[in-house]
Every structure is written in C-alpha cells, then in structure tokens.
Length: 220
Ligand SMILES: N[C@@H](CCC(=O)N[C@@H](CS)C(=O)NCC(=O)O)C(=O)O
Image 1 (cartoon, rainbow, N blue to C red):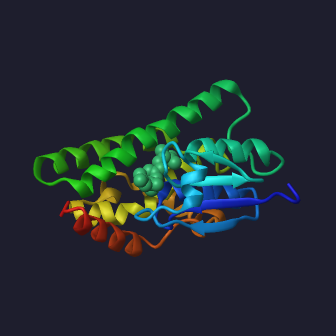
Image 2 (image 1 turned 135 degrees about the vertical axis):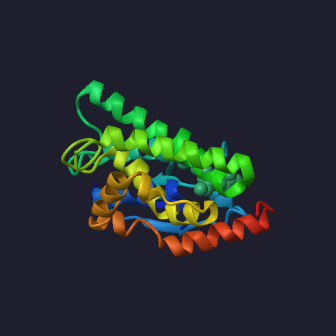
C-alpha cells in the first residue's frame, strides 16, 4: 500500500529470505533490503526477532513479522489486490500449507544433511531427498505451478531451493535431474519469471558459500 515502510532483514544465500523476496516481487512491493551478519548479529535483528534471532524478518511500518512461511502469508493478506498466492478455497489453502510445510520438513532438513554428513548418513539423506522431490513431482503433475495456472504459495516455498541444488549435487555427487526431470523442467520454467529470477542467487555462489560453511564448521 502507498506509504508503507517495508524493510527485509535477510542474508543473500538464505532460501527462506528468497521466499520473501519472491513474494514481495510478485506483489510489486517496494522495500529496503538489509543484509545481516549472522556471525555478528546486529541490534536491529536481535530487537526484531528476539525469539529465534534469525533472518528473514519483514519489518512493516516498524512491526516485525518472523518465519518465512508466515511472512509470505502476511504479504499475501496485506497486499491482497495483486497476484494472490494462497487459494481462496479453504481445502485448497490447507493443501498448499501442507506442501509448503513438507518442503520445510523434508527438503531443507535433508539438503542440510547432504552437506553436513558423510558416508551412510549422506547416502540416506540423498535417497530421502530424491524420494521427497519425487513426491513433489507427483503433486505438481502436469500443472504449470503447484496451485494451478499461476505462481502460488508452494512455488514460493520450494523454488529458492533450486539454486541450492547445484551445491547438494556437487557435494553429494549425484544428479537430481536424472531422477526428477519434470520437477527440474518446472523450476527452469519458473525462472523465466522475473519475480523468481531476480530473487534467486547464482548456484555457483551458493556452492562456494556452502563450501565455506563446511570448512568453518568442520563438516567437510
Ligand atoms: N524457519 C525459519 C528458518 C530461518 C533460518 O534458518 N534462518 C537462518 C539463515 S538461512 C538463520 O537466520 N540462522 C541464524 C541462526 O540460526 O543463528 C524460516 O522459515 O524463516
């Protein structure tokens, strides 16, 4: 809305932050981007998210909203005149929330296991990761987007992980496209949308970031 003061506390490589960036871009909301140092958290982040002390945080007219999926729902409710993200039907809304929650519980956790573990644990994570992507591929079916004809909540939740796939694949030495060609084709198609392409990061840069994390935390 005109006159809104919107600031996003974020970290460039964060898939959670990217969700918020896509949602704001879809709604054409102007905002100030504020990159945070997570190894030396600033006073603003600690004040705006005293519970989890994590990014992303959306600060709207001085009020903080935390947790990426909650932020995306908030954005959808506040800027409701443009590009609806959640369906209006209660059952379809519940389904969208289910799959977005699945992305958090499965893809994020398993992806992290791929670059923080080795040997059997890593192999198990890779298998579970592919199985989870196949379930998502089945849910997508032949639709252009998870919710149907337009980009919606589940797409916003999932697509940021696409720019992390190269890091998972390179570190885990496996190939996602060979097992999930339809899902990868969908991700590539979505990247043709400016709201998505400008919100995601270069996979090589993400990979370099993950390599840095592995060294820093002795995961390698
Ligand atoms: N469930 C949260 C996850 C956010 C999250 O894990 N943020 C990370 C960066 S990607 C963070 O701020 N980490 C700093 C910390 O945990 O101290 C969301 O969806 O927003």
